Amino acid sequence: MTVREVLNAVREAKEVKLCFAGEVLPFNRENKLMVDAFANYIVDKITAADEDYIEIDIAAKPLKVGEA
View 1 (tube, one colour):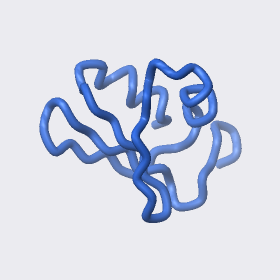
View 2: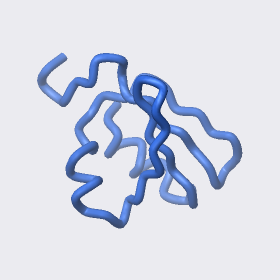
View 3: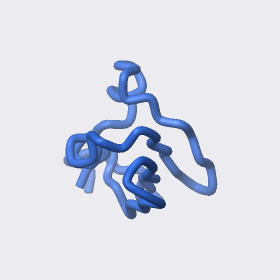
View 4: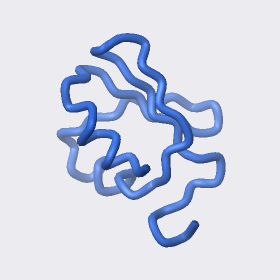
């Protein structure tokens, strides 16, 4: 599953964080550049603290679609 697919599945989440190698970044789905930069990365894990907050963990070696 990719970051884009997760974002499409959890449209109701008000706060999304993107996690990689211990870093946690706020993810603004309205920012087209940010979405374009991360949308095709493979997701390792999704954590939902509640229905309004999720964390998307990118795979340890960031892979774009077709690189796996």
